[in-house]
Length: 304
Ligand SMILES: [Zn+2]
Picture 1 (cartoon, rainbow, N blue to C red):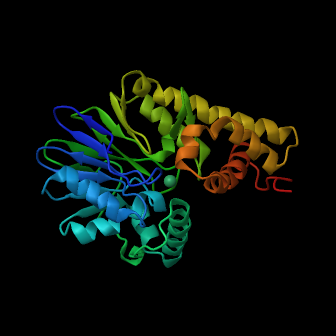
Picture 2: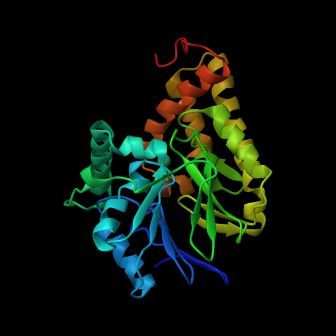
């Protein structure tokens, strides 16, 4: 199965067991790291995929780009299999993991996704979820052949981070820059802040990036990589314009959401996200954009 990228320094393979629960294994001559870790319920299958590629080597790091259940849940299971693995996350993510209420949400979301993918029973280890190393902007994780420079990337969540690998000119992107939804179309994922997401995307435009490891997608280079930041910016502004334009025309939140869905809930996104998850995200994004862009404390009649 795994979708594999290789050059003379690194191998990157998607070892996620089901769509939407993507996890990317990075292998160099010296070290190994997993970028995000998928769901809980299929973590054992992901670990089998990891083991089949590691050929007896151990996993050194799990790098979590943020604390959402589809990215962070599998990390606990890695700890049971790879005794010396270090789980890396932002300080904010590590704080999220210490909250029983946040773990309860992750459990519930895993249960619902487990049902969707046909995994009736799964071993719940989510109470053990924690980061061994907490990082923020400017920190560097040394993998010997390559180094990972931490970039704070709030916007999708407050805890989102990206990693830049200078030796590869590769950015391990966070979901704050969005997910590819089609040709030159990027599904915006700005759940907690529009402007801060735009700021992050603009920052990418000024970086020396030749390869991107995109969430739920894998490594892209060439034209797709070159165009991604501009596509992400244009797509984010398009969604903002749809929301604000419709709001000004007096449309309801449901009508705005359907308009949003007709543009961005493409087959590529439907593969990763059930409609329920799309609507849940939209219920955050639509009022947030109205409030932030129009600087309103009350988003008026929205939701009626
Ligand atoms: Zn997320």
